[in-house]
Image (cartoon, rainbow, N blue to C red; front, side, top):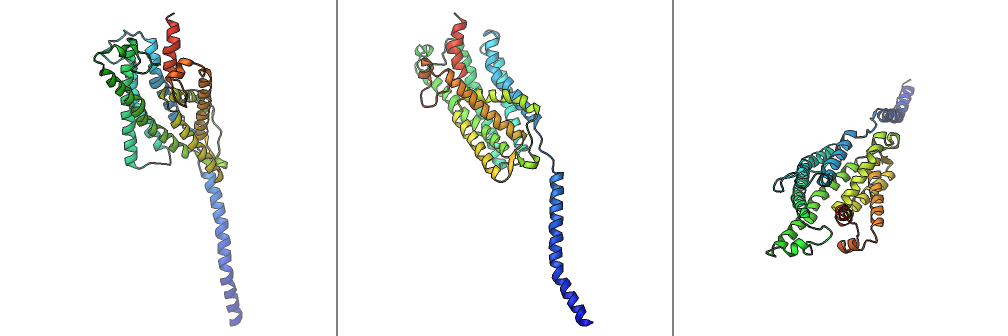
Length: 314
């Protein structure tokens, strides 16, 4: 009896680990299935993209439109105009929306980097505000955007001639320093937000109708950002980083959710619009001289002052 009891006990000891492992694996697989079923499906951030689109079109693109619609003498030139007040509002809302994007992204930068980025955006947009406001007033007295600063007729007659250097410094702060401080953190936040727009195939979603409605204005704004802001290189690097991320995440079994599809389609459509824009103006000899270098992307405001504005006065 003692021998049989010992034999049964030893057999149970040998069987127990195997049974425990099997039970653990079954409970783990069942638990993982329950977790996958409980996981919420990623939703499209309509409030975020709606605010982003309205801000860009009303406060950014709307500035030159307001300048064209309202008469030049509607407000004294020594005071800020309506377009300047729109720029004031953009300088406030742009950092707030970028912060909101970072809050909803799982990829978060250190606090110091976030603060420096917001300061850079605020300073870059402020530099652009000052230079843009002065440029509007120069246009009223005959300044031509398609000509370099020193070749403009009003600059040739400027006395003393050293003031031309001051205007060149002003446009350098706008086109180079201001745009870099503005757009580098801007596109970096978009990339960080995009990196969090992936989910499993079981949770993969298509774009909702609201995303398709916002796709065209969002892509058109990116076109404006590339052409008027001259951010083609930065935009291309951002799109390349997004494409590389998509390829890498697919190998891990992750796919774009509705927010990611919205961003990827918007960037793709913007590049198509830029290609059409460049093709239409490819044979313009005057713009060719004003946009030297390998990358030829004319600015919409330059095209307007060179062709459309002159046609309206004929």
